[in-house]
Image (cartoon, rainbow, N blue to C red):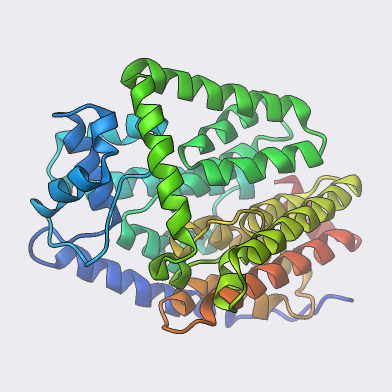
Length: 387
């Protein structure tokens, strides 16, 4: 389909208004008196506990829950530390500061990495690029104190270096082992694209980080983490909190009433379909469209992704919006960009339909990105892809 060459002057406002809404919620959280509990509280408490006990003891869910309760007023749910030992290396220094200072430092560093990754992947900043700092996904991640900005920044940096520095690209993508369920999709994507050297570099970097954590914390920590992970993964399909905020095909099928096995089969089918699509797109020539498709496709490939993981999708929306601004928007692109941009707001609404809607929004966005990549590139798109 031919692009529409009209200039959508309302697009920045469409992206700005919901962004300000969620950013206001984050500022309200910071202004609240006392140390309010969020997900970073778990990371900070694990770092603090690690100063007194071994990491294997931190993975003791019962003892860690008691440790948390002594410091925060907790929601009526268990809050274990379920990240791998290599992630404990990342969080350990934050236990040296008070909670509020650690949270601000964590959010600031994560946001800086995310913006640096966007700069690398999308080219020089424009005023519109700064919308990434107040995107609903960014604000939600800051509000939770979660890892989405860190993971999104690493993914953007790694993909941005893929053409020019393939080994460095792999080394950066290998750091996604900090959140293993996001590493596997990118390893499979690299293999599907025929980037075997980059994939090997990613595996080497991931193994090096794991070996460092083994030297620091010992085998007992890894054994304790694997035991807790087995217990935690068995509870995921029954967890209302994770299903409420989920954006994966797996969570979508669970919310529609499918059994766990059927949901897993659908997730594997989605994984295969995304890999097949990305491989076909890459064969037509690497471009900015393929890079954006990799960001969005990774969320359709993993079974465990939630709303605070979505900053990478917000970056994809900005990159697609910039391509549309330069060369015209094709049918459906504006609606898909707006829906994906506002997805974190949708997921804050109650109802069993949120995860299916999220999966459909991401699938539609990926299809439109691939369609743009399949179309003959105008001079403006070629310039955007080269950046």
